[in-house]
Image 1 (cartoon, rainbow, N blue to C red):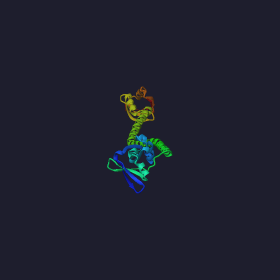
Image 2 (cartoon, one colour):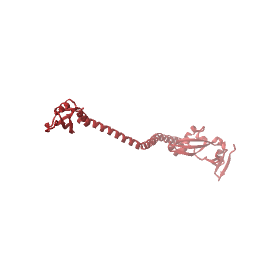
Image 3 (tube, helix red, strand yellow):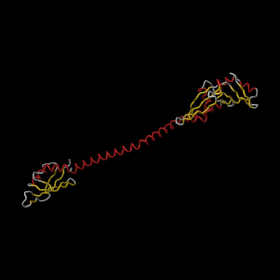
Image 4 (tube, helix red, strand yellow):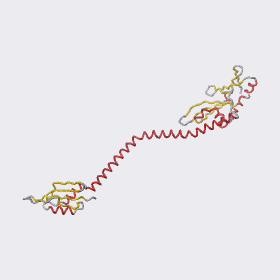
Length: 274
């Protein structure tokens, strides 16, 4: 490889190594790490590449930020110092400061990497390590809560979308429950106070031939019937034989119209609960 040097002014120079000296890869970090990328990349260099931070000239470009995943995607670019074959030291000995490296990238653009960046060492390295550890610890604590908040928001949106259908189903269930309760209450009251249809059916079976009713009143479990019959006592006897009627008795004197073969009666009876 043949390096080219361009001197600017009296004190600095730009180095132009061949494009085969450039190494690049994409790396990802938590979003908060963007504030300390130089320190974190210096500390992680030997994990991300085969080189230590002190053995390379490096730079980076933020490719994209993924707020949903809480990650930042970075392109790490580096040139090993070994590829410069000691040229920076030769320039410094001649009183020329090597300021940067310019190198072509595969996409035909040119990348400039500063040579004047002070590589972290001693206390600075420890500070960078501490800063990186603190940043990663903060991310480790905050990221689960951020993800949980996003998941809760997603579930809230789903619940809000399903709420109209759920409300409609609940209203239908309430109507069904209310209707069932109403029917049950009617049945219970009918059993306690008397079912008019059942009472009428029992009277129809109990009335002897030639007997007919002119009035029927059922209130609070008490039955009052009026009518005409050839033998009114047989009406009392027939009702007493039916367990639905409790203690039937005449509510008024039996009267007979002159010239008629039937008598007029009024009978009162209780209705037995079932």
